[in-house]
Length: 116
Image (cartoon, rainbow, N blue to C red):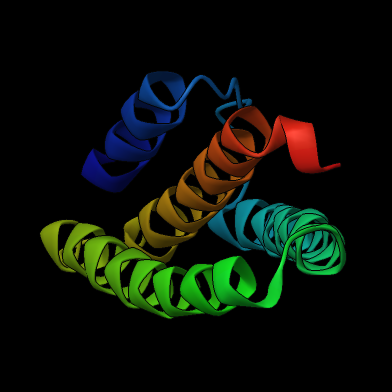
């Protein structure tokens, strides 16, 4: 019962409205699709920027990307550990991953809009 309550609270806190009978497995499956879609969109944007910007900027962006990916991994691992007592841990980690990936995409689109 506690895990279900945490799942509902977490889903609401993340802006997602999941039905109470949605299983963790179904949520994980949907989030896996969201993760792949978010990563595809970010990768396509990064590829577009690579083609549009000069080599020196592209090199710096690749370095920033590697650092950002490390940050995303550590941040979302911390979220998973915070929820480790229940089955919501992988859901929380995946929600974090999607949110940070989408944030990075929005940031790059806003800051490098002139290059696309």
